[in-house]
Length: 196
Image 1 (tube, one colour):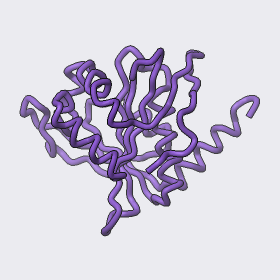
Image 2 (cartoon, one colour; image 1 turned 180 degrees about the vertical axis):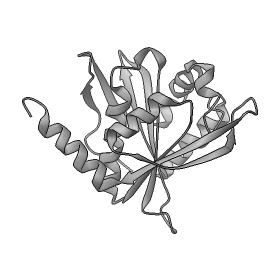
Image 3 (tube, one colour; image 1 turned 180 degrees about the horizontal axis):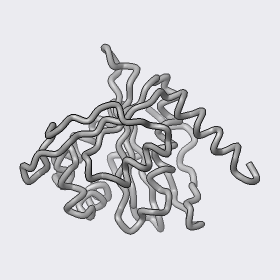
């Protein structure tokens, strides 16, 4: 699926700019570099072992098939973040999308995760998805804050539901909201900005 409106530049809180664009097969090496550069404590709690070539091949295939929409952020030609919208095209959850965002440590705290998540919400709305979910473990406090700022709310805590890569049980947090509710909140925030 071609993503309209990309590539495009996005302004971050510190005044810097990044280029947002769709992920492609040609990005396999850069994608692995990004994920391998994440701190171990981040990779420890990700659903997949994102440091393996096999993972990137499976992921890029899902992107090519349209099961996952993926945006990357580049600064000075280097991939510094990746955000994905997972969707099922058929069945009882075809109206639900799952959002995942990963940002290079050096680029955190600048609003990049929020910018990417906002773009995924727009894409979800354009696709007709009615509900969005985000899953994380209890230690991913910054990620939770980003999604709460977008309008997601905690719907469930599954105690000891997942294990990190060291085999330690972790609580899984499920945050969710309707796409329309999130979009209305984003529009209201945009209208409140000076000069908008």
